[in-house]
Length: 442
Image 1 (cartoon, rainbow, N blue to C red):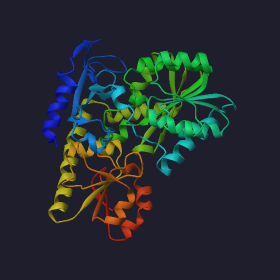
Image 2: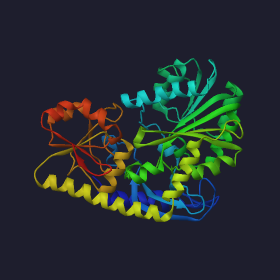
Image 3: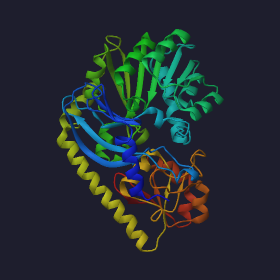
Image 4: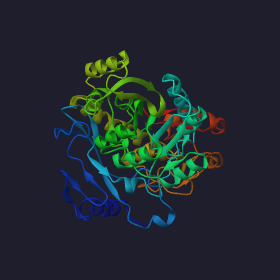
């Protein structure tokens, strides 16, 4: 088996030097990605890198056993802040074709928490805007169609747009019509010509996943009805920084969003961010409501969030440099805890194999020697191996069969549900570890 050093060497060559890197619209391009040298929101080049995780694999690139002997691409994983508008973003963009290929296995419907959240989100939007029955609702990055199934239950016509093959298959099995493509302005115009304009366009986590946000907004403009509403929900930078959620930094998440930079961005497209709701999903998210300028009054919530961000200096380089130092401290604390338990002869496994967990494992250097296996509820991931660290993934039932001393909950955003489902493990003497905001035994 290739050593991590050899994998990193191969991946550096593949990702940067060996793929005929070349200039492209101001970026340094390669076959699998490019270095982004300007701000995705305002296009300033006044960027400062404040956090560098080194080289990481695709966090949803779970491996089959026969793939373990093949070179595994690693990519730079670092964050920069725009010193002009406050946007926080990755410095390197991995191509969507690599991230969302036939092996992409994310399923947002696995947990009851997720199901309740997204079905509730659909109902809330319909009620908030009195969306008439038979209105067209489009979800960008529709995955397995969970959110759209909620709109369908409310009487809407629904359509998903998502490039991932397996998730859209499951969406169609749910009765959700899906366009299997990345959302672009060109695709949006085709969809509008075929299906008409949408009263509601949603995107959960998607806005933070898109590199070309100008194109996204041009597409939304082409597809949105005159009085329609865009609803984007993504993790909030404030929660990431204050609760040490650095494991949510990975290659699919190219942006880490705050309200102030977004208000200026949407204004460039004659649109307004007129309302924001904070939600608890994924460790703390913002649900943003955007419409054409003058369509809706700007709520006090938007104004108050902007004032709070400015008061706390949320996106200032100084604040983010401090966050980066705290990340290093957290890493040491977690590694020390796990190594101490290992030295004492205790067994520690992982629960869940989310993308965020793969960042944590790779950044902290946690391999099978410290963590012999991960358990996972999703059948897509069972029987595969974690990217980079190559820890085998099994079912939750295996946890109860083996009964290890400790279980690190990598899907910490669903910790209450996980601990309830696996209460038999706790009752048999097992101990849970929740990694953020600080490693805690439960």
